[in-house]
Amino acid sequence: MIAFLLLVLHLMATCLVVLRIMLRDDISPTTRVAWVLLLLLLPITGLLVYFFFGEVRLSKRFLERVHHLEKMIGQPEDFPGVQEPGTAFAYATSINGFPALPGNRAELLSGGEEARQRLISDIEGARDHVYILYYIWLSDHTGVSTAQAVIRAARRGVRCRIMADALGSRAFIRSEHWQAMRDAGVELVAALPLPTPLTLLTANRLDLRNHRKITIVDAQTCYCGSQNCADAAFLPKARFAPWVDIMLRLEGPVVGQMQALFAQGWFTERHGALTDFPEFEGDLEGGFYAQVVGTGPTVEHGTTAQLFSKLISQARQELIISTPYFVPDETVASALCGAAASGIAVTLVLPRRNDSRFVALASRSHYKRLLAAGAKIYEFEGGLLHAKTLTIDGQVTFLGSSNMDVRSFDLNFENDVLLRDPVITGQVRQRQMAYIAESVPIDEASVRAWSGARRIVQNACATISPIL
Image 1 (cartoon, helix red, strand yellow):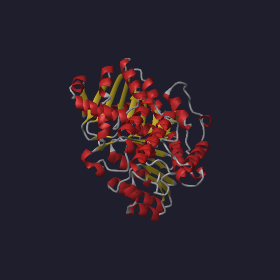
Image 2 (cartoon, one colour; image 1 turned 90 degrees about the vertical axis):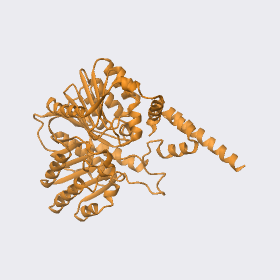
Image 3 (cartoon, rainbow, N blue to C red; image 1 turned 30 degrees about the horizontal axis):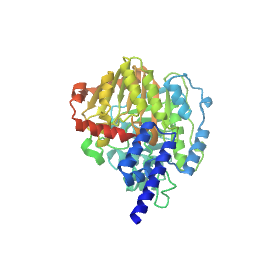
Image 4 (cartoon, rainbow, N blue to C red; image 1 turned 60 degrees about the horizontal axis):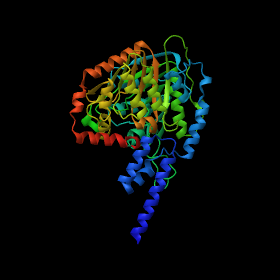
């Protein structure tokens, strides 16, 4: 009798969850099918997975603070930027209210070691403030030397504000280095703290993470790219090393936008006033047009995927993309295939060995379709290619923390820079060519040679990828 009652309760719960899935307007038909399949294949586990990870759940308090800060930061009409209707730049402006502004300059850093040295040098020269946010901060050479530079800055009177993701940097947050920064007067925040058993039902969804990588010095300089505060050896996953990253050091109005994005994240976690953040001061003469793009679970669902699709549609001759985690939704996958089929030289550079086995399998499920459309695919062999880059026609660059996967599309807080400049784009393109030089080309014959069992596993991973 008890078993029968449990069965009835389970069936009722499953029916209610299926109805909930069918009523949702914020997910695609593919995602609905994936969830229903999971509920059928894993009856009890599927219900638990949906309860914890099925919806982008944000606490009421968190959302109220985010929306309040969005209004304070400004809207497109508050800025004298250039709006080009129908372009990716115009769409990017609609996300945060940050338009493409002139007067920017950038330097493409040669690698992780130079990025660390330049960043520390800028911190050493800071006079007013240093703001830093990382998803992963490790107690390795890069992580410790950066923390020590921040401590020295704080001791000479520089206001230092540090954020690190509570999950991605959990070991560092518990370390002596975090405490040493606190003792030196550094203001510290663990972003998106993990809930306790008592707050589990009212807290943010567990796997919503702050994946941003931001460093700002004196509102004059900022860094943007794929590198966390960690060595290329990346000790937690050393067997995939080296981690191959890309970083830009930027000056100009884009720094002010990056600082506004940091301020939004800071005061979402802590009380305070935006007036605590000095505004960017500088001329808008010369330099190139650029804008910051900040995305995450608080923006409209599908925004990042739409931005990628808009960027892809802007290409007229060439589109080159590198990303470590390639699990596109149907919108982006179709845009890539459409661009390649229409004669655009579409090139994808992905890691040959991925630290996520699931992502590697799901990624390769798209190969046959992309190759048939005319795209070129290369798998990088010189480590884990962690650089997230997109260049268009040698003129436009999109670069930052966003991967081309579901997590970056809708779950993680990300920061990127969209710019138009043939010089910087040419340099980023050269870096992409260097990645290709260390890669193996994938052709249709090799994909056709994959066994049926392998294709089934890959396609199965791709089928459930929208819910993971």
